[in-house]
Image (cartoon, rainbow over all chains, first blue to last red; front, side):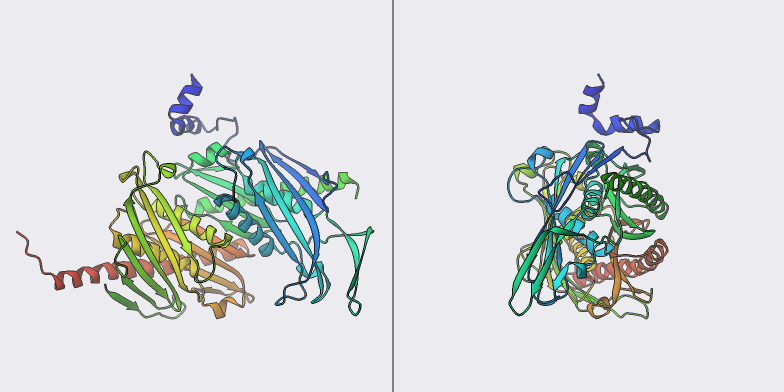
Length: 274
Length: 229
């Protein structure tokens, strides 16, 4: 009976639940889903992490490559994030070139990395003008059940913190590169940004950490990235208007969540024993 | 077609200039400049929709952003998403089910504040097209420089010395935040201050819209006097 009602009029189904102050999955409006993190499980990659937020699963793998730095920035290496949303994660993605959401997500992750400054690109430079590290960060979503960007940012930062780059020596005159894979240096990650997504339902109700269903039924979505008490990004791509007090609520919620997630990632990395 | 200019005041927006109905084939169009940043927008709709995009209860809004040179890249996709979502909330989409409304934005010149300019131009083109809207939208950009000063509507020279740049879009009725996009790091206090300054700036844009519409109609009435019975 409930499933019939849900498929005929999903918005009213949600409204009836929200009127009682609870969501269909049992959470209240400000509750987050449980998060599980696993790091360094992919041995073929320089760094990796798998993050699960409720049903959303994102795998991040970081591969390092050697290349010549850009002519305009000879002292900097580069970070190339790429978010892939394969057809297996959700019925709305078809095989073929990256969908709009995948492109916007890649752009968002790239902007978050630059804004937060979590990796100093100067650390990736080996020999100015000649050789630098390029870190390809591939984020693959295996299951899209909402809060995609939250999972992507957590996975990316956790993976970056496990990256160990081999020692490279470059002889400028001879133009030879010697890579010693046994001697490894940990990549320095200066800070840890955390993203939190909110959905605006019916123009009034704010839902934290929405599921895919909630995101599709809501009239607007907003993502806030927090890093060390400062805001890195407040991204609200249209949707219903928000008042200042609602925005304030979201920022406070995002700050609290950042503390919790950072503790969780620190615990996970400590358990690695590195 | 009509053009209108507003002089800028201190600590305020760059001078704005607009021409409506610049394109002959579209339902609505606008050429809008803010300082040296120029954008041309065209609106087509409500028009026939492709079967894969059809929505039974509302119009399917699509936004296309074309950069001045080269093919559209991932950064442009983000602008398209923002413009599309903002406009679909502002338009009365339920009035035109099973149709499509396309908003095409062509960048002419980027001298800072391009996203804000694109959103404002899209709103002007929608006004020109006559499609019913719930409210108008105005976008204002601002930046925070290394001395923590907040500058409204910076040009590209000022942006070179910025540590954060923020773009806000407001609606015309309650001045709530419709959309927001930021780059760089800033504190919550700086965010709130920028929001307040940008909101004050948006008042000027809304009065600019009103002036434009008033003058266009005056011009129209003057050129083709109608007798009403």
